[in-house]
Length: 304
Image 1 (cartoon, helix red, strand yellow):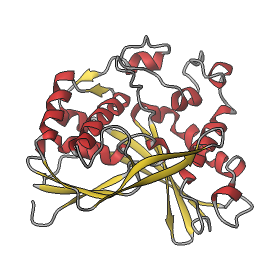
Image 2 (image 1 turned 180 degrees about the horizontal axis):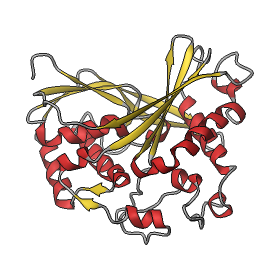
Image 3 (image 1 turned 120 degrees about the vertical axis):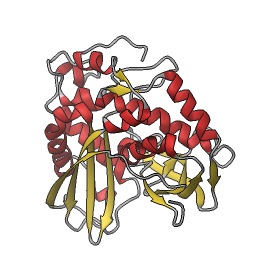
Image 4 (image 1 turned 90 degrees about the vertical axis):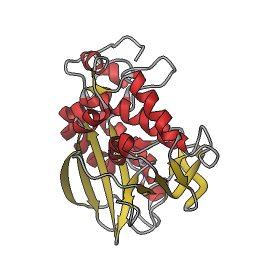
């Protein structure tokens, strides 16, 4: 990362331990909080993730430092939660910023709506402030009348659970399906013409997100993994192209190309399996903070 770190946290993020890809996965740690919103699953809009993200950040702002509220580096020590979850801590030589250390995703479960907040690595020092801000945003900020058809008041937060996750080694199949659980941003290189570009993006994201766990890959390792991804086999028959819509902070509708369905990948998956495992925790592509890019790894029967 090229920008000069401006806080103590950023200085730690700028100096990760350089490890191999197996060690990258072994260092992974996240905590996932899931809220159950009673009766909010029916008629929920597809852009609920964007509204949840903005209400979450709005609630964090209430307890933030004046510097963080003005989108400047927080001068508190330790920094406030808004600085950790909203501000870009570092920026690389190609203009790529360090990903935010959290994901928000929502899905229906019967009549209810489940809302997930996943916090990665060292950002878990601020995880309780984060989940309480998410709850406050749901109750006091989120415009429910625009997000759920027929709902005029906030739903009851009827339950909360916590999952702590670390990545363990596992048998690598010969073929695996990446089954998308939410739309995947399709900007950049076209996946139908260049299918390995999806894994190239995933390598970069898994590497960058792992800085929140104190580790990173060398440039040479990242390059070798990308080269290996280009030599794998890709079955795109289950892939569909479409669009994802979400309002920006000014209320203007954003419409971006997106992927739906699944991609089956075959070949020597072992070098990339730790990356695929990390990606199942941190998603792939842009707008992951509002739920895009979620996938599940489904080994193809008979490929083990």
